[in-house]
Length: 254
Image (cartoon, rainbow, N blue to C red; front, side, top):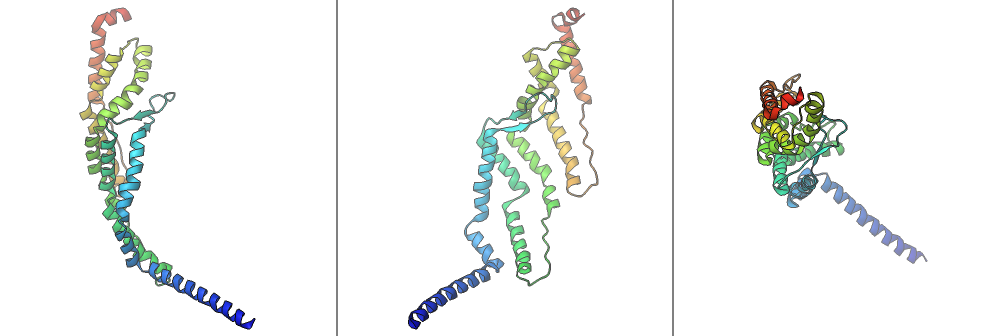
């Protein structure tokens, strides 16, 4: 009986010794930042995150379209920004993400974090600090936005998918109900394209981004976005003037 007990205890001891040795080896390995970073590099983890996880999320978002609430009409349902070529749009958006938060930047900051966090977790140091350099990333936004607006032909997408549907309802309340001037569907589309022409719309977007970016980068204490509609008022005046003259609209209105 004693021999059996000794054999059982010896076997149990060997198992526990093996487990303890394995756990100790894992702890020692996990506490070495260079080993962890080496494993991640060997597994191409950063490329996997960007090429698979991020790419799949972007492709899924683009294929469904992007819902936008314009605020022009509270009763209207959200309009959806669609893309003629979802694959090309996804590539452009992924490029925007990589321009602002590149995989090299993520790799660098993750390794810096490991070098600070692991010694703190193992008790080798009493504190650690991680500088994500967010301000530098934010400062990259204006250039990245200009690139993606061009790649996506974003101004025309905004005009066709967002402004035309919303302003159709808005103009019905203003021009038809308030002024008594009814615009046909083709006239409304032409008017929207004249008022919100792509060059003007791009200028407003870029000016807003340039104004907001220094605030979020910590380079300015406030921001003030101003939309320039002075020259648009001239275009609107000419559109209404042409409509009043055309087909005796003014005569019928009176």
